[in-house]
Image (cartoon, rainbow over all chains, first blue to last red; front, side, top):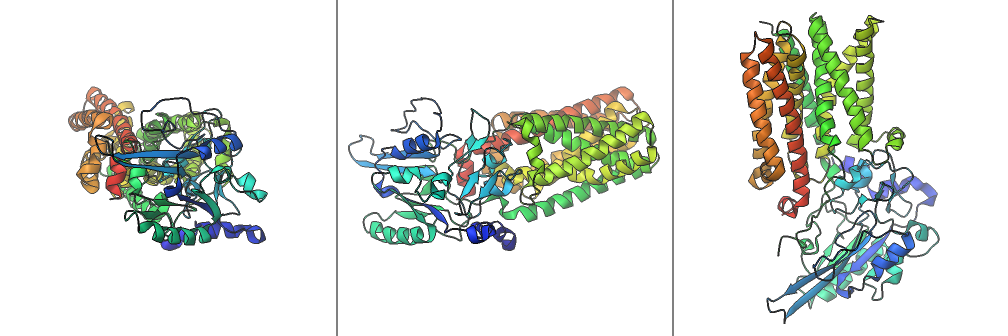
Length: 273
Length: 285
């Protein structure tokens, strides 16, 4: 079964580019540095020319963006952990983004080949191929992908594929004023994240890395995070697993069910009374 | 404060419309109907075989409409055929459905026109052999998502889809064949209907009480309770109406309605298990 999964890893898919393959690029989002300015959200919208999802006052701290969607590819979460009197407590901020998974469920299930692994090891939806079937939406363990209302295809972060092609960094990382969003080679980012965690843990025992482990349920992310609390506090799944992981067993079970169904029909047809 | 981040979903519910559970119903019915048509043709019960191949063709026509109409870019349906992806049950399913519905339409066309009957019989046999796969593959399709209510019943969901398909196909025969010819359809409706009710219990057991709430509460729960009333009523009528055309037709109508309602119940359960983050959190605890 692990062999099946290995067929669809970032490394295997990027290797198909041959000489054009590049280092795997990604994000390290260090939430301890985030000040909640939302410059990343704005830079992303501007560069990728993404329309608004509408204006709504949620009453959920300073978060009126609510969630990642087809047209919102960066989302800053605001978590208020206050005492009832609100005189003490802390405020957690985290800029969320597509995880560009090593084992990407969206890419696995896309029936048109619209979703591809790029030469940078990132996951991109080609909007001229996407026919809006919506399978990727329900295959993402992080709820990243959504429908773009204006043209009814599915949308998500491309890690600014067009900027990477010309040697630039993604718009959000460029705009981030505190280097909470860091862009780079994934292997180097993983190392940087480990070092940063050791430092931060001296002050915040609950600090933890998210998606830095290549052995987790999605094979680790191309986007890594340093969090100050449990993932679910930020609206992230604590133990995400690519849905395709046990697909061969599912087909096997379905095969048994189909064979039983065939047998039942035949028995019903021959057992005349 | 509610669970997770302001109680917001962790995974996104489907962007699909109600055409998709309608497809699960119509495609499931078509698959098993084609198999029964094939079996009846082989057993020389031509009248029921004819009823069933028309049922399969009707199911295929409804399925094709649902599948294409649900695409947000229907004119790009053809993009489904530019790749073959074993990692995508939808890609595999497109080819299963294409081969199956093509065979069914040829078989039904030969039946209606009386032209090229041997070819019709050949494609009817092909459709009959693919039929069970057609009826069950959609369980793999929804299982291969992160909706907990669909992902977690690994063992029972394919069985539930098979049983629902059997009940619906049998119900078609009860509704449209005469009591003289519908013996096999009646037995299939009884077996399928009973199995559906029983496997649903097993499904609740497989995923445990917390996850089963997605199936038993809210809209999904209301649909499931309605489906059970319709199905039990249909089973009773099918068992009693052996010599009555009227009671047979009532049984068929009840089981068809029960099968469709059950499909919607399963679909809504999947959506509910995405909308409330407690299901994802429980499954990943």
